[in-house]
Amino acid sequence: CPPCGEKQMRVVGWRRVASTLSPSPPAPQSQAGGDAARWARMYEVVRRRGLVLPNSEVYGGLASALDFGPLGAQLKKNLRDRWWRDFVERRRNCMGLESSVLMNRAVWEAAGHLSSFTDPLVECKLCHARFRADHLEQGSGGQGYMCPCPQKNTDFSEPKEFNMLFQTRYGCTEDSPMIPLRPETAQGIFTQFPAIVRNHRPRLPFGVGQVGKSFRNEISPGHMLFRMREFEQMELEFFCKPEEATHWYQYWVQESLQWLLDLGIPSEMLRCEEAVGEEAAHYAACSTDIEFLFSFGWGELWGIANRTDFDLRAHMLASGKDFSMRELQESGSTHTLPYCIEPALGLDRLMLALLSATYTEEEVLSADGQPTTRSLFRLPVDLAPIQMAVLPLSKKEPLVSIADSFADRLCSQIRCEVDVTQSIGKRYRRQDEVGTPFCVTVDFETPHDGCVTIRYRDSMFQVRMPMDQVVDIVSDSNATLWDFQGPQSTECSTG
Ligand code: GAP
Image 1 (spheres, rainbow, N blue to C red):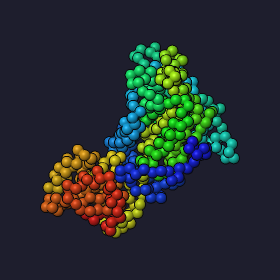
Image 2: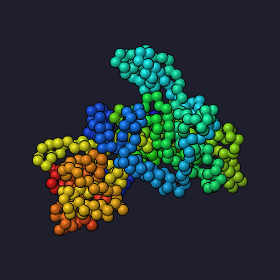
Image 3: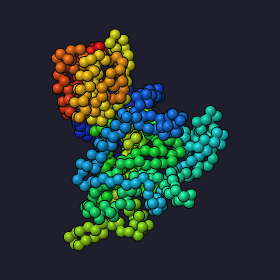
Image 4: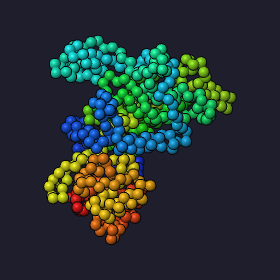
């Protein structure tokens, strides 16, 4: 941890800034790690509710490739927008960029990815399955690796360095050159550095952010959204004077941590791991991984690296172009090759972390007084894919028409849907399972008194109110009253 100098730390009691409506803290049972059955249930909810879908499923799928259903796509967009707002738009000295996935092969040669973007690969001599050596369990007695095959073989080939770049042919003839699909968005920023300086005349320090797809031919993809071959990154390259690099490195570690806490991720699910010198990636002098306690244990969520002037220098040497910045000083002007601090976050991993941190199972009483378990995601109101579901109590008119026209009015301001199928209790469950914070029920009295019943996901508290007041609940930044544990916390008091 750069701020305290310890090599490893658990983030305890970090400053927390109130955001709009934060979710209730997850129940203690929602801690990640440990309970495998519980995590299997969470993954099952995510799949059953179509947040994440197997890719090309009708043809038997494509191993480890995943699609995002309508609600997953919306949740990702909400996270992406939040990152862009907080790391690009709202920072006076940061700007955005959109570069291509495909780049000149020379970029990857200069940046060192053709030679150094490798992971150690080993092959089981019995079943011939291939693994990343550092992902295999140690055999009994701590000697060698152990294959997950039934024989628990420990006899493996020598580790070979496997290059993870995906390559594609650029052009339509057989001799068209093979070029990599980018494994990080960062190089698009580094190679456009001279153009950005020329066109925008920024002063140091300044940042350039980018969101986009990256591709890595991972040896062992897995854990759903954790390690994928095609994934999305949100990266900021923050350029500063070399002598200020340590300051900005520490600053971005803290900013990144704080951002995760503001998202509602509990501090006890986060920790920092620092890597220095040889332990860090080939381009970095040092880096800090913010790790999250995933279902399988601690795993990297966000990497903050001090890339020094490694990339700008490499491209300057290889291209012969000038990447230095002219800076005016009292004594005249000097040329500086800036250092770069890079907070690099995976959007898919972030989504998995948020789902894991907010997943809760709790015992409630059903309408007939029987104990039952409900599963929910306590997603923050501004990130939830659906913010309000409108539920007509019956499919009969005029309830459905009232619900439809009410939702028509709402949807210019909030994300809402009308849900008409099955009993009201089942609809509440369905909305809980996709993290919808508010359900509004249109009942048989609504046509007469213009009132509806609104229910808050986390407390299941319900209250009747005029339809006109309902929108204010979602937009009210002080809406914590919805956390109130009302007397009617059985589920189906409206039906
Ligand atoms: N430009 C620096 C860079 O790419 P990285 O630590 O390799 O650094 C940054 O990746 C982030 O991208 C990781 O912290 C992780 O969140 C995400 N990421 C990396 N590989 C991934 C994969 N195979 N699947 C999903 N996310 C991945």
